[in-house]
Length: 312
Ligand SMILES: Cc1cc2nc3c(=O)[nH]c(=O)nc-3n(C[C@H](O)[C@H](O)[C@H](O)COP(=O)(O)OP(=O)(O)OC[C@H]3O[C@@H](n4cnc5c(N)ncnc54)[C@H](O)[C@@H]3O)c2cc1C
Image (tube, rainbow, N blue to C red; front, side, top):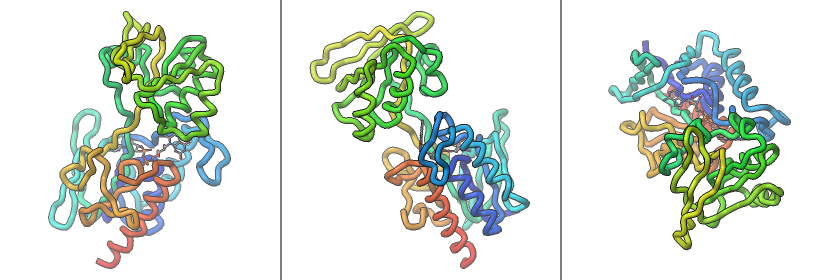
């Protein structure tokens, strides 16, 4: 069969698109590895409009429930699978899915919406791979409490880094934020609030060069970018928050990406440069990345997909 639409991704963008696809009666295949959007690790989300506060895990569950409540026989949901390729076939598209055992399936559709978000950028320093999950982690909310009473470092200068530091400061002995430049991507209010905490120190122009330890992390070295002097910090926890990489490699041959791998879209419609493929949320070159924006972008895309398919 040929689906009207294939939606790839189960974060706020994908789910919003799925709900709208169902309401518009577009026969849809919804593919996602899971319903855990990036903020599912957050303790409390306070800006999901209409909800005063919700944990990331509860938001993810409520998104899944919302889609399942309206999917009916219009939206077929496949979870636990990855889209590994999308290719053009005449005016239609073939999406290849791979499961964890490596089995592949192919699905045909008239249109595709890519809503695959992003994943965390890895720290490039000697020993970073060796000590991952042995003191070096990419999720303060998940692993922070293990480091209660200890000295830890947060690497990064964006909101995620400062928010992680704020959280860690509540129960760690000391928290040192290492930022590789002397400017911060985080909101000035957040920088000010977190830096003012008694047990938080912020070091700028600090480029992490090595993670050290035996079985677990015992410290790290960083280079002062101004003086080239290498300094050591004795810490037992390292939390890396240095940005995100868009999950777009599987569509690189079928849509245009920018230098960072983000899908180029027309912000009025979310259309990519390939007719028949739309994209929404953090995988696009949209300037701002938030749950509400991801959901809104996807709704915009669905309106446009509906108009496009029904006027073909
Ligand atoms: C720690 C943290 C806290 C945050 N807190 C907030 C906050 O408080 N408020 C706010 O508005 N925003 C917050 N954000 C930002 C927000 O989470 C993102 O902007 C939002 O999740 C983007 O949604 P998305 O649907 O585009 O992508 P994502 O949430 O990244 O979801 C992508 C989905 O696609 C799936 N997927 C990926 N690749 C494939 C594939 N090849 N095949 C199948 N499925 C795939 C993933 O499993 C996932 O389900 C936070 C982000 C982080 C990292």
